[in-house]
Image (cartoon, rainbow, N blue to C red; front, side, top):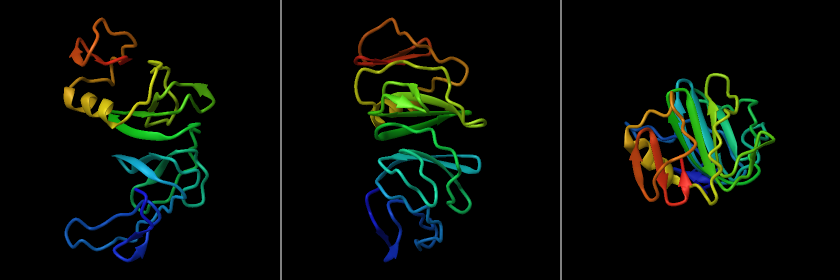
Length: 173
C-alpha cells in the first residue's frame, strides 16, 4: 500500500498483521515507494509496485522477500516502470504493469519468471497497454494451467478463455 503506519507502528508501505489477534507482526520489509501487489509461494513473498528500495536492497519495482522475516533477497529483475500486479501459477510468477523492460530484456507490460531460478522466461506476449489486476484475476479464475502451456497468440477477440488461451480486449495471452 501507500501507508507508513500500521496499528500505530512504522511499516513503510508493507507489513503483516496476525489473522488471529489482529496485532502488527515484526515482519517489516520497509519499502521506499508504494507496494501495489504481493504473491506468496513456498518461503518467498514477491512484491511489485513503484519502490526502488526495500530493506537494504535496491530492486526496481519488483522484489522477493523471505516470507519468515521479510528480509529482501538480492534478486533485482529491474522493471523500468511500475509493476501493478502479480500472479503465481505453479513455478511461474507473472507480472504486469507499465514497464517496457525487465532484467534488461524487452517486455511490454507483462513478463514471467521461474520462481525456482528467478530467471526471466521467454514468454513475451507484447501487451500494447497497461496490464493491471483485472487481467491476472481472469487468468486465476479461468482454471487454465499456464505452467505447461503459455501461448503467445489467440484466435479470438474480446474476453474469452479457450484452448489454454486468454484474450482480453487487445491484450492476448
